[in-house]
Image (tube, rainbow, N blue to C red; front, side, top):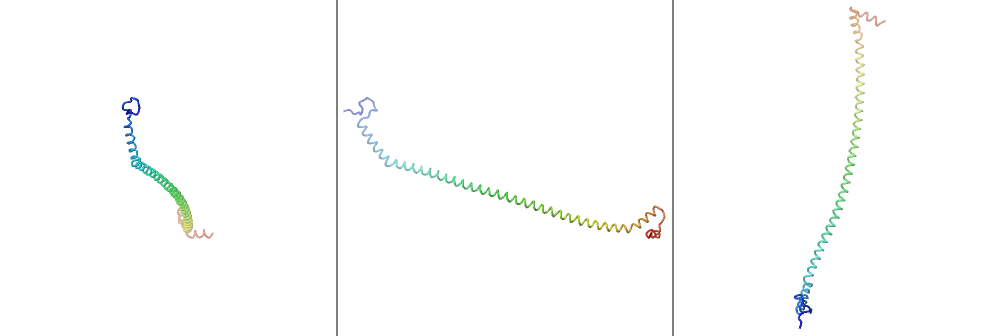
Length: 164
């Protein structure tokens, strides 16, 4: 009986019927062992790995979203703080300008008061000096006349002039 499966001379590539049966039985046993034990474990491992990778990527995405929300909140608070600082600076500037204007007005009032008091004092001193000088005018006039004439002028001549 012909031991080979194909009636051609293919050398070692032409399987025998007995070798083919042994190979099919071995393949079936190997397939059964692999499909019942090894393949489910590998599939489970792959599923776990995919779940972990997908879970980590979902977790990373949620963390990115949370970080974006926190950053937006931070930027909003920072913008509000900047706005408040600008408002405070503006308010302080306005108060400073008001205080300067107030101090300037007070300074002008004080200056006017000092000038008025000085004018009153100067006028009083001028009147007093004028009165003092008027009392001495007769004496100075007599002395000047005596110098010009070169002889003494009596008091009687002075009185006759004032009575005329």
